[in-house]
Length: 274
Image: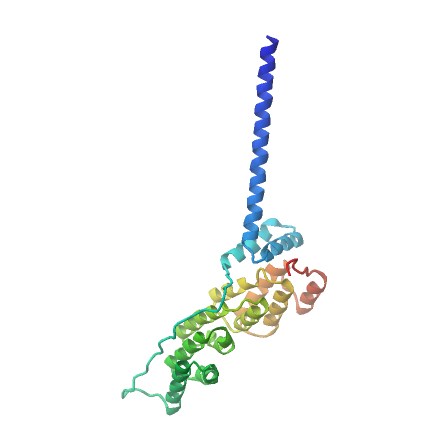
């Protein structure tokens, strides 16, 4: 009888021990998966660093999760090399009786076409300023397509077309601009281009897409750029998005340029990655 009760007790203890071991294993696996997922969202672990810093500053894990969620939605990918694209087919304006283009506009159209045909970058960017002021939407569209084909090196000339009055030209410019940006791997260069664009954009979706690029880069680089947008007197929508992004990066609401400088001096923590 004593042996019987001994076996019952032993079986009970073994079951409890097994349950404990299974529970420990589940918790350990969940923790491992969480760590892997957090790091998988980053380029060289920068986003994970941002998460940790945001959580430490705010003391609110749920608020810090927004950093990861925002960066995940951005889905930024770094290209392995420059893109290869076929030349665009430019719009051909008919020389009919209703054509009211001026001789200067006709000449501009021909110069844009020739620059693309000859793959002459200098000739293309020489047309950009004139095309930006041109009243003929098709000519501005041709300029956007031509600059887009030249890629990242044409971003400074392409950027002003993001604020074109014509919706079709504006959307095309944004598409070409985004593809050109993908050719840039250096964070400082990317942020510089984004800074210029956010200063003139007023489209909420485009601003949201570009602001995501600030998540995961060096925080000092991000904050200095955002301050320039806010102080630059650009579009109201761009300034508001910059202030919102500043809060994401620093964990603090935007207060002033002086407060941003204080944050960099006292709270900025360089990334552990080189």
